[in-house]
Length: 193
Image 1 (cartoon, one colour):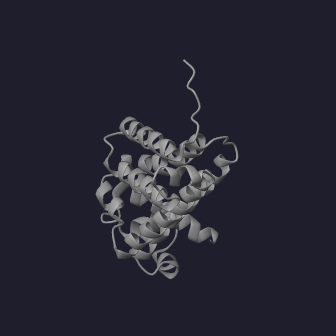
Image 2: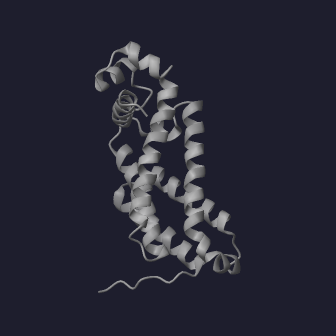
Image 3: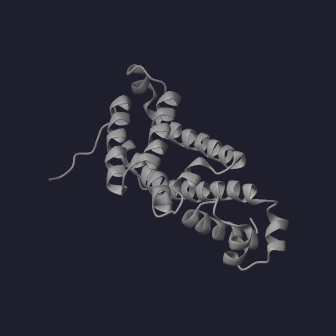
């Protein structure tokens, strides 16, 4: 991504997060990015293209942060904590103060919805990778790695949109993590009192 393109996507991300795509004009994004509308339209044909680009941009940044965090993990529990914190919780924080969270959650347009679906597939692939070492245990519990990963991602992403607040989100994610660990029969670390 070129510097100008990245500057525009970052400005669009901030603007969409605050006001929603529906209430944001391309002129608002050009101003926030410090570029002309002509430059903006030359790089992104329309707002729908920019919405899709911001979805992919946020996801790639989050996935890079997950990969960095996974290097320090010693258990599936820690890996799930990193995944949830650096994808679901960080996205929740991005939309928490939005004027139009429904617009953000819906993807705004067909291009945005397609981008959200592509990102969901990447989430599922990542979680499948985390669960694969526990394949035998997962199958013994009556599931498959791909089904459990799909379940985990679908629930976590749904929680991001339905949680009342960050505390509620964290409680929901903790319950989901426990369920996944039970299905994977992965050892849990003991909390020290």
